Amino acid sequence: MSKETHFHVVASAPRFKVRLVTSKEEYEEVLDSFEEVEFANQWMDDCYAAVYPLEVNGEMFGLVGLNKKRIVADKLDGIEIAAFLAHEAVHVKQRIMIHLYEREPSKEFEAYCVQNIFSSLMEQYKETLKRK
Ligand SMILES: [Zn+2]
Image 1: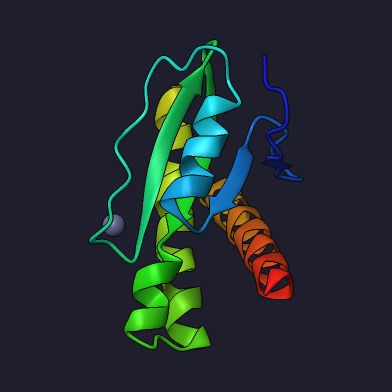
Image 2 (image 1 turned 90 degrees about the vertical axis):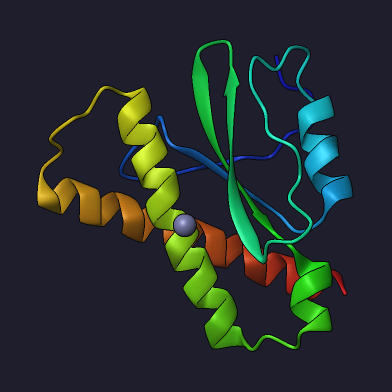
């Protein structure tokens, strides 16, 4: 199924796979790593951050795009970036709940999911800083 796609598996919810990409090129690399993508959006170049819901073989991936080009151009600081990732973590949680037909998740389960997704995104963001 996937060749070289590194998704983070969210600790408390093994079916939540989260991946942060920071450019259109990286986004397309992830899409290309799957043989068959049933559903994917276009990269949004005018957004700071967005969720790119990705469904492959009935599995939902929480793919989050952080548009580094815009963030650097507009000189966003670490707090603003973290706030965007928190926002997108909630959207990933919402998408996955819909995918799992989890209509009334417990408040604690929701909060842990957001916490773990956010933590994974921040961890991955930290890695992108080491690359440059
Ligand atoms: Zn939003």
